[in-house]
Structure formats: structure tokens, C-alpha cells
Image (cartoon, rainbow, N blue to C red; front, side):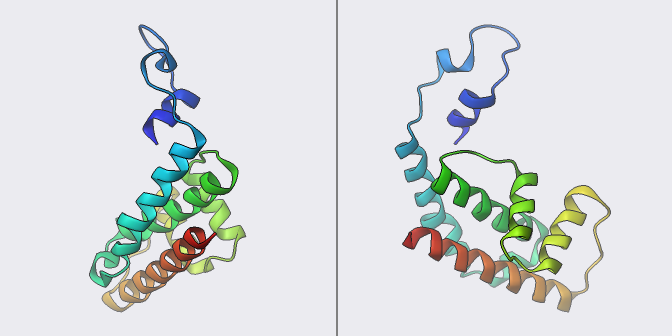
Length: 137
């Protein structure tokens, strides 16, 4: 993933361009990496409900699957901001998208234990469902 990001958008401050130093990543290699990451890291992570009580999991899980979907279907990389817009446009629950948006770009809401539990469950189920759909396709 990093090699593709550097090849596509890397900026040289000094020395050779990144594409001169880093081996090229084919679309097939990138897709294989994304599928492996989803299957071996993110899908198993959905079996750990307590992890999803933390903001970092709630933010990164849904954004990761949105980004992975674009990479697998279109062969391109997107930003986390674009992934958040895509999540909203593809039917992800509005309260979850609003929560992520507030934490990334505004003042995050303070959540009590029950709200954290509900939000974590929502994010975990969304991530699991979208991973299953991506890996089936």
C-alpha cells in the first residue's frame, strides 16, 4: 500500500523520485494485499467487541473498508475524507458517519458507556458485512 501511495503521490524533497527507488506494485499485488488485510486482520478484529469501544477502531474500521472497496473495484487509492463521504453515500448509518466526521474534523461528542457500546456494535457489524461482501465479490 505504501509503495503504491509513494509511486502515485510521493513528493521528492531531495534525491531521486520515489518511483526510481521503490519497486512498482501491480494492480494484482495491491488487490491481493487488500484482500489479505481484510481477511486476516480486519475480519478477525470484528470478533473482539471490546476493541470497538475505542474511537480508533470505530474510525479506522469503516474508513478502511470503504477505501478497500474502491481499491478492489477501481484499482485506485482514496483518502480517508473521501472514504467518509463514500460511507455516507453508500448507506452507512448516519449517526456513525457523523460521529467519525466530528472526531476527525470538528469537536468530538462525549459518549457514555452505553453509547460507546451501541456505536462499537454498529461499526463492527458494518465492517464485518462490508468485508464479507468485498471478499465474496
